[in-house]
Length: 315
Image 1 (cartoon, rainbow, N blue to C red):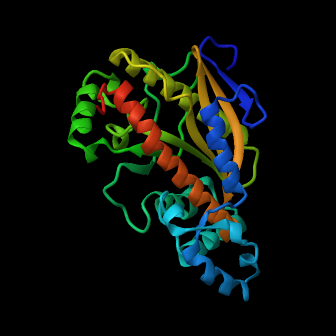
Image 2: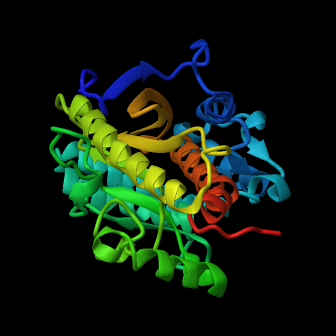
C-alpha cells in the first residue's frame, strides 16, 4: 500500500515520535492519563466503590487520583453507575469464556458500552451520536487506487439536524455529491450525518489486528479524499484538522489510533491502549476515552466541518 501514489503508510503512535502533529500529541497525552486512570470516575461514586472494595477485590485497585469532582468529570458525559458497569464486565467475561464471535462481542459488549458513553441510559436529541455500520461500503469515487473497499464496525457522527441552518446546508451539499450522501459511504443511516470517529472491532484472540489496521487505513484514506473534495468545493482549508481519530477494539481491549494526510498519502498512526472491559476500572477508562473523543467531534471536528465543508461562518 505504501508504494501507491495515494497509498497508506503506518507509523508508531508515540509521544517520542518527532513527526507527531502537536494537536495529536496533546490528545494522546490526555488518553495516556486516561489509561492510567486519572480522573476517570466521578467522586459521587467514591463512597460506593470504597464500600464494595470490602467484599470485592476488583474494587481495591481504585485510588484517590482516579476520582474527579462531578463538575469536572461530567463535562464529558455522565459517569455510569456501578450496576451498569457490572453488566458490561459480566457480558465481556461471558464473551471471553464462550469464545464469542466478533458480531457477538459487538452486540453484547461494544454496542451497549458505546450507547452508555455517547447517550447515557437512553438516546437523546444531541449533536453527537453513534451507529453500527458493519455493512457500510466505500463509494467507488473515494476508494484509493488499486485497493479493495473495506468496512468498519461503528462510527461516531455529527447530527446536523439539531440546527436548521446546518441541516439545510448539508442537504444542499448532498445534492451535488456522489450517491447524494455527505460521507464516503452510501450507508443510508449516515447519508446526512458526517462521520467523525471510526471504530473497528475484532474478537478476542486470533491474528486479526493487522486486518483491523488495514480496514481502518483504507476507510480513512477514502474519508480524506472526500474531505479534500469538500474543501476544494468550498474554498476552505485543512487548518484546524491535522488528524482524524479512530479506535481499534480487540475483545476486551480498546486502543486509540489516528490518520494524517501528507500530500496524497494517508499516514496511519498505531496505536495506544486506553481502556478495557475486563474490569470495572477498565470500563470506566473506556467510557472516559470515548466521551473525550465525542467531545473532540463536537468541539473540533464539527466547527471545522461547518466552515470548510459546508461554508458556514460562525460569525
